[in-house]
Image (tube, rainbow, N blue to C red; front, side, top):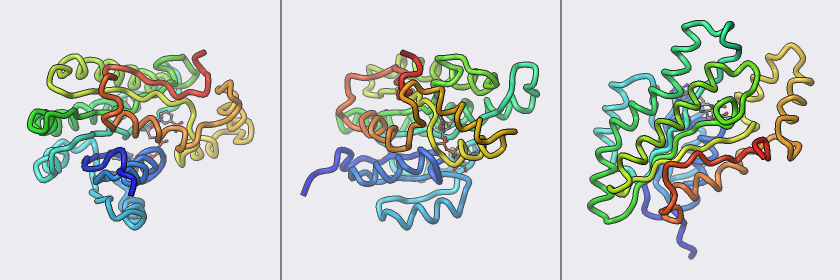
Length: 253
Ligand SMILES: NC(=O)c1ccc[n+]([C@@H]2O[C@H](COP(=O)([O-])OP(=O)(O)OC[C@H]3O[C@@H](n4cnc5c(N)ncnc54)[C@H](O)[C@@H]3O)[C@@H](O)[C@H]2O)c1
C-alpha cells in the first residue's frame, strides 16, 4: 500500500468546518496524517468527523486565549499547524468601523499569535527530538495584501500582517527545524464567498466581478489549494520557509 505523504504526522487546522480548512483536513487525512480539526461550528465539525476516521474534532474559538492554551496542553506535539481562520470585512478605510478593524485583526492575525504562542514550544521540542522538521502554515491572501482591491481595507491590512508574522517566525526558528510559510490564494469558491456574492446588491454581477479578478477566467476551487498545503505540510518542502506562496489564477502576473 502507498505510504501517505503525511504518514505519522499530526496536523492541527483552525477553521476546519468548511471551505479550505475542511478540504485541507480531508486531504491531510487522506495523506496519512492524524488531523485535529478545530472550529466554532459544532455541526460542521460533526459532519467532518464522519468523513474520515483519522480526524479528531475540537470546538475552538481562535479568539479565546484560554481555550487555545488548554487545547495545546492536552494535544500531542504537532508536526504541522495550519492557521486558517479568517473573516472578510467589506469596505474602504472610511467605511471601516473600529469594531470591524479590531475584529478583523483579532480573528485574522492575533489568533495566529495565540496559536503560535501555545503550540510552537511543543513543536520545537518535537523537531529537536525527532531530528526532523515542523511546519506552520498561515492563511494570508492575495487580496489587498499583495495586490490592492477595492473595499478590502481591514482585510488587506490583516493579511499583509500575516505575511509579516510569517516571515518573522520563519527567521526566528529556521535553525531549530521550524518552517513557517504563508498561503495567498486568489478568489476561492467557498461557503463564505457564496455568502458575499449572495449579499451583494447585484449577486449575478458580483459573481462575474469575482471571476474577472483571475486572468485564468474562473474562481479557484478548494482542490486548487489543497495540493500546496500538503506540500507545505510534508517534508517535501524542507527547503521552503518564510515565503508568501501565491495560488491566484494569474492575478499578479
Ligand atoms: N474564500 C476566498 O476567496 C479566500 C481567499 C483567500 C484567503 N481566504 C482565507 O482563507 C481562510 C478560510 O476561508 P474560506 O473561504 O476557505 O472558509 P469560510 O470563510 O467559508 O469558513 C471559515 C470557517 O471559519 C470558522 N470561524 C469563523 N470564526 C472563527 C473563530 N473565531 N474561531 C474558529 N473558527 C472560526 C467558521 O465557522 C467557518 O467554518 C480565511 O482566513 C480567509 O480569509 C479566503
